[in-house]
Image (cartoon, rainbow, N blue to C red; front, side, top):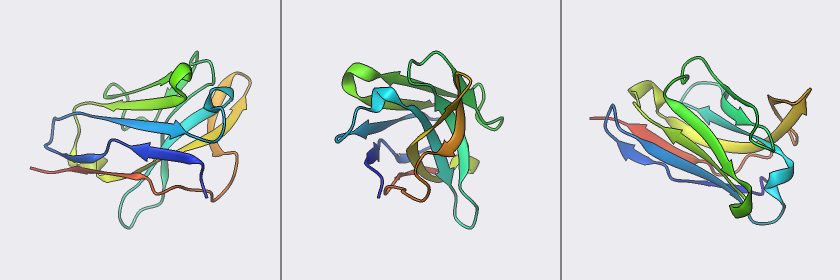
Length: 126
């Protein structure tokens, strides 16, 4: 079971925006790279974006580049995913996870395999 809690999802029209939050209540999230993942109905879970512990390096899936921005506030023990220009294909349950860091870059592989939380549902529909 994940110790991270996702929030901020909801229903939004195409072209709209949402900001997701990933918070940790039990451990200090600031030591870890964090990744956002999503899973649409009938599809495999995919990596969306990640950020290193310092925030100095980020990465994005091609499908969200230029529309999504990942950030973190280590003082608040929270990582954010700002999603703009949302499209129906962004419909999914979004999850966050602590992920590996390799050579100062975040790698979209969870440190603890299979420990997914409840996620937060994002629905883009008119």
